[in-house]
Image 1: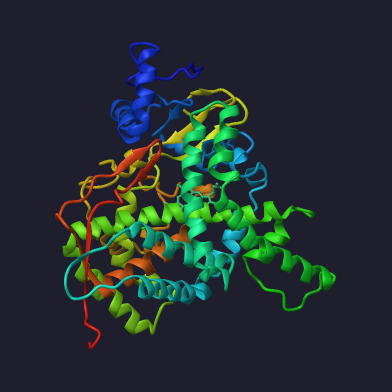
Image 2: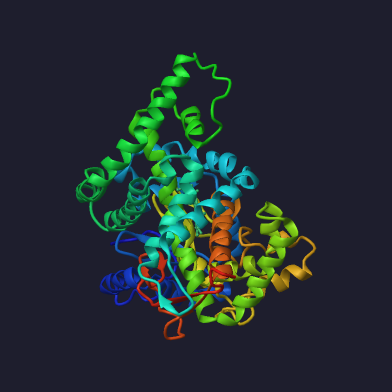
Length: 478
Ligand code: HEM
């Protein structure tokens, strides 16, 4: 393992061996590895590097560098190249995804801009899944396998918007996507640590040749096929053609794109959405189940807003400031990934702090450490659910304090023109899910303690085996 970037490397001594020890530590404690560097060099805004099994990574807390990364030119410091390499997407799915990331515009057009219209559909799916799956009475009961319940909810709501009925209610299809999202994440993590020849082997055995991928393709393929046939039979002039994501993909994809490549664009969107949102909602539930004192004020606010607005509207979502604040606080303390703004240099360049970056080098910002920095937040290690709703009271542009609005001290969704395009949709899903749970149940951790979280490479995930107890708030006769 070697590097050409001349910046300090905390923990990488003795030479060579130290770097390997740090790389091993990074796999199970990326936050700790990065935090050591931030504590040593962050106060002066000095850039440093960390050792990981796959590569040296340059980490910067410098505000000038942050600004450069957020406005970076894709042909110099590329988000797509970093995302492709990090998840080995070209081996696992296809090189077409990051070569032509048209899905980003599709998210803005069909999810973000249509939020008002699709919100009732999200609510409907959440209610349906909970009613079908969860039986909870007036006594405290442990919720078994809530990872599965939550990921199915996220998968159903996401697919209601991505592929619509009837597929979004097809249990086998939804379960396929939950499984595939996990497999993609796992395959990506493992592939990152091995040489190219082994990447193909892992990609084939975990994903490409898996039965679950074949089932997914066999269910979604005919939907695209049917659409393309209808479009062709009307010579492209189909007056009432559906205005949905399937149509958006057919339109945006290059002509003659294979059925496989159309389907995996949906799969890639599901992969981006399901795992991240399920992890985020679980962190939020663990936080609110440990700090139960926040549940009543959030509940009161939701009930009051829904009464006044007559139901779920975009404005109602905005007005649920305490709910928004508690979710943002959870995202701040528990981002899905310990570093964001990951960029790979496609050309050599010099950062504004003078760091020379060679071609191929990765540069990231330490989101976990910055989110927890006293430079930006008072008592940064505390879960203070209403931290941001208090700030919103003082801010004339209140929405800036919302969960989907990044700033230099809150980088969980990245920041700038390449910030997560799905964050508005994700925020809506998180709000609907937590609102449903909090209005219908009391919940707490069985031992009243917040469960420990787990790191694997950059991934920061909750302990899904932690015991979460639920009790119904009203009996059926209420
Ligand atoms: C709470 C849930 C989510 C979290 C925490 C999250 C987080 C992130 C982060 C950190 C990035 C990288 C930005 C950067 O570092 O510069 C990102 C990018 C992205 N996210 Fe999200 N995300 C979430 C939900 C979603 C959803 C629901 C979708 C799609 C519907 C989505 C689609 C994407 C896409 C397409 C990218 C661009 C990178 C790429 O093309 O691979 N995300 N997200």
